[in-house]
Length: 138
Image 1 (tube, one colour):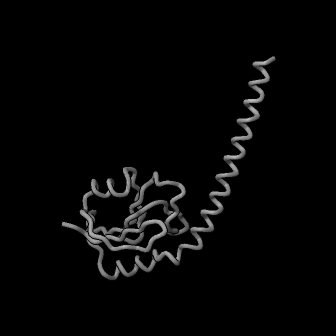
Image 2 (cartoon, one colour):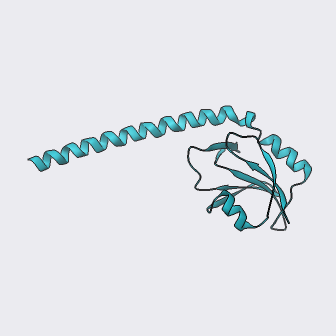
Image 3 (cartoon, helix red, strand yellow):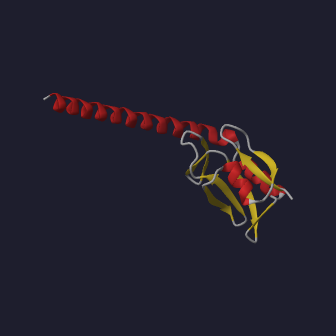
Protein backbone atom coordinates (compact mmCIF):
# COMPACT_ATOMS: atom_id res chain seq x y z
CA UNK A 1 0.00 0.00 0.00
CA UNK A 2 1.21 3.50 -0.83
CA UNK A 3 0.10 6.83 0.57
CA UNK A 4 -0.16 10.26 -1.08
CA UNK A 5 2.21 12.82 0.45
CA UNK A 6 3.73 16.13 -0.59
CA UNK A 7 7.43 16.21 -1.40
CA UNK A 8 9.15 19.59 -1.05
CA UNK A 9 12.65 19.84 -2.53
CA UNK A 10 14.78 23.02 -2.25
CA UNK A 11 14.38 25.36 -5.25
CA UNK A 12 11.61 23.23 -6.77
CA UNK A 13 7.83 23.31 -6.73
CA UNK A 14 5.84 21.05 -4.41
CA UNK A 15 5.13 17.57 -5.79
CA UNK A 16 2.49 15.04 -4.82
CA UNK A 17 4.04 11.57 -4.67
CA UNK A 18 3.00 8.11 -3.52
CA UNK A 19 5.31 6.40 -1.06
CA UNK A 20 5.19 3.41 1.28
CA UNK A 21 4.05 4.54 4.76
CA UNK A 22 6.93 2.80 6.55
CA UNK A 23 9.28 4.83 8.70
CA UNK A 24 12.18 2.80 7.28
CA UNK A 25 11.43 4.14 3.77
CA UNK A 26 11.04 7.73 5.02
CA UNK A 27 14.39 7.53 6.83
CA UNK A 28 16.06 6.15 3.70
CA UNK A 29 14.51 8.93 1.63
CA UNK A 30 14.92 11.97 3.91
CA UNK A 31 17.73 10.94 6.28
CA UNK A 32 18.26 9.07 9.53
CA UNK A 33 17.76 11.91 12.04
CA UNK A 34 14.18 13.02 11.49
CA UNK A 35 12.27 15.79 13.16
CA UNK A 36 8.55 16.33 13.01
CA UNK A 37 6.73 19.64 12.90
CA UNK A 38 2.99 19.62 13.46
CA UNK A 39 1.23 21.73 10.82
CA UNK A 40 -2.31 20.93 11.94
CA UNK A 41 -4.00 18.35 14.15
CA UNK A 42 -3.76 15.70 11.42
CA UNK A 43 -0.82 16.86 9.29
CA UNK A 44 2.91 16.80 10.03
CA UNK A 45 6.07 17.86 8.27
CA UNK A 46 8.98 15.40 8.41
CA UNK A 47 12.47 16.71 7.67
CA UNK A 48 16.10 15.78 8.33
CA UNK A 49 17.72 17.34 11.42
CA UNK A 50 21.16 17.07 9.84
CA UNK A 51 20.32 18.58 6.45
CA UNK A 52 23.04 20.56 4.72
CA UNK A 53 23.07 24.08 6.21
CA UNK A 54 23.15 25.62 2.72
CA UNK A 55 19.98 23.79 1.55
CA UNK A 56 17.48 26.45 2.60
CA UNK A 57 14.07 25.18 1.55
CA UNK A 58 10.97 26.87 3.00
CA UNK A 59 9.93 28.98 5.99
CA UNK A 60 7.27 27.57 8.32
CA UNK A 61 6.09 29.60 11.30
CA UNK A 62 9.31 31.62 11.44
CA UNK A 63 11.49 28.49 11.22
CA UNK A 64 13.69 27.82 8.23
CA UNK A 65 13.38 24.23 7.05
CA UNK A 66 16.58 22.85 5.53
CA UNK A 67 16.77 20.14 2.90
CA UNK A 68 14.03 18.00 1.42
CA UNK A 69 10.94 17.34 3.52
CA UNK A 70 7.60 15.52 3.36
CA UNK A 71 4.13 16.69 4.38
CA UNK A 72 2.13 13.70 5.61
CA UNK A 73 -1.36 13.17 7.05
CA UNK A 74 -1.73 11.31 10.34
CA UNK A 75 -4.74 9.40 11.65
CA UNK A 76 -4.60 7.43 14.92
CA UNK A 77 -0.78 7.74 14.93
CA UNK A 78 -0.56 6.10 11.48
CA UNK A 79 0.61 7.71 8.29
CA UNK A 80 -2.26 7.94 5.79
CA UNK A 81 -2.92 9.47 2.35
CA UNK A 82 -3.60 13.17 2.22
CA UNK A 83 -7.10 14.35 1.33
CA UNK A 84 -7.54 16.49 -1.80
CA UNK A 85 -8.28 19.62 0.23
CA UNK A 86 -5.09 19.13 2.29
CA UNK A 87 -3.05 18.57 -0.86
CA UNK A 88 -4.38 21.85 -2.28
CA UNK A 89 -3.89 23.70 1.01
CA UNK A 90 -0.27 22.66 1.58
CA UNK A 91 0.69 22.85 -2.10
CA UNK A 92 -0.45 26.47 -2.01
CA UNK A 93 1.24 27.06 1.37
CA UNK A 94 4.64 25.83 0.14
CA UNK A 95 4.63 27.36 -3.36
CA UNK A 96 8.17 28.31 -4.29
CA UNK A 97 7.35 31.88 -5.31
CA UNK A 98 5.91 32.58 -1.84
CA UNK A 99 9.15 31.59 -0.13
CA UNK A 100 11.87 32.40 -2.69
CA UNK A 101 12.57 36.03 -1.71
CA UNK A 102 12.69 35.36 2.03
CA UNK A 103 14.84 32.27 1.59
CA UNK A 104 17.31 34.13 -0.64
CA UNK A 105 17.52 36.95 1.91
CA UNK A 106 18.12 34.56 4.82
CA UNK A 107 20.62 32.55 2.78
CA UNK A 108 22.58 35.68 1.86
CA UNK A 109 22.69 36.83 5.51
CA UNK A 110 23.65 33.35 6.71
CA UNK A 111 26.43 32.97 4.14
CA UNK A 112 27.77 36.43 4.94
CA UNK A 113 27.88 35.58 8.66
CA UNK A 114 29.38 32.16 7.93
CA UNK A 115 32.21 33.55 5.79
CA UNK A 116 32.97 36.37 8.23
CA UNK A 117 33.32 33.77 11.02
CA UNK A 118 35.60 31.73 8.74
CA UNK A 119 37.82 34.79 8.14
CA UNK A 120 37.99 35.51 11.89
CA UNK A 121 38.93 31.89 12.57
CA UNK A 122 41.69 32.01 9.95
CA UNK A 123 43.09 35.24 11.41
CA UNK A 124 43.14 33.78 14.93
CA UNK A 125 44.85 30.62 13.66
CA UNK A 126 47.44 32.68 11.77
CA UNK A 127 48.21 34.73 14.91
CA UNK A 128 48.45 31.58 17.03
CA UNK A 129 50.79 29.97 14.47
CA UNK A 130 53.01 33.08 14.45
CA UNK A 131 53.32 32.97 18.25
CA UNK A 132 54.13 29.25 18.21
CA UNK A 133 56.77 29.69 15.51
CA UNK A 134 58.24 32.66 17.40
CA UNK A 135 58.34 30.64 20.66
CA UNK A 136 59.98 27.68 18.91
CA UNK A 137 62.57 29.91 17.25
CA UNK A 138 63.38 31.77 20.52
